[in-house]
Length: 440
Picture 1 (cartoon, rainbow, N blue to C red):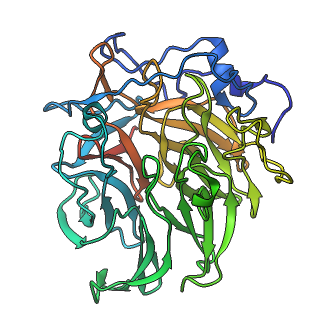
Picture 2: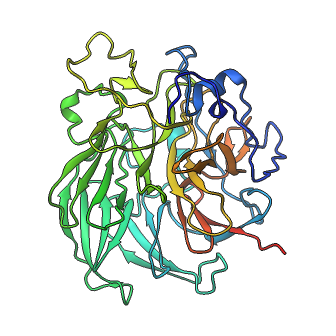
């Protein structure tokens, strides 16, 4: 649970308990050196946020260079990394069905008028969003795809995927869609979907991802909807049903706002011991290098998490301080900070043997900070349904050369098969499998 002062393990950014051996140089590696001050500001359960504008807001865009033959991300000792699939086009999110089928949503940000350096930081390709879902099979469980085909196409920036009974659900950026699906055959009976819920779309950086997850009973669907702006600068009348997680019945009825004030909740998963909904949230920009930390948190029903008026509990957003609305609800303090501007998108609890108990976080990487942060998969250990230790590096090697602002790729969606972890590298168009190595 929360503690009132900034002490305890959350203030220490430790080396991985997995024994990760980072041998990268300062120019070529992705070790992110921090001192005790910025760790206090950015990581753990009990942080003291940096003062607003303590450092000047800075943009530093990466250039995606991809992976050379033989290169892979670096996993800790006891794991091997293999290329599950490559030659893809913005593999953004992954969903593993009970029958072992692996679904991948291919989609990307589309926004007019962006600078060339911003576009180069997104993907090695310049093509439009492919707007499709692929399905893969790994028949022998070796972490390499044996079969691939297009499952659905003609979508609109799909991200979330979910199978409930005889239906396959898709979170398009503007709608929750449902398709007739045979769980027995693993196929669709029709490519024509039914729109269940219209969702707001567009806005700042698009915040276009609409992730989906169900509860244990399978009688509710949660839909993440990011904000349409950084801090409501376009007017809160444009933020209706945004910066929220919505809850609906499987037929789209009974909508309620399950959690609000969540600027851009993307990854979602159910904590296996408590069955609580957890999410990874991207926080706001333009307040400085170490503010505001992205975070992972449990989401309590109908609670408010601050955006845009507050951050990290009841800290007042300086761009709102002279015009705060009256009678705002209390802003909840998130459970665990995972670094400012890390773009923590992917999120999954361990679901395969050989992985420690806790949350794995796909950190897509910074663009508005003076030095690169993120660009890795981080791990937060859990015990009794709560964070239980310092954040650790799990999968690194995505930063190629800091001095040249080059990165090989950017991790995003995370999912588990029954044997291994999958990580979508949407910038380099690769999916990686991280497989525990059997030891005698």
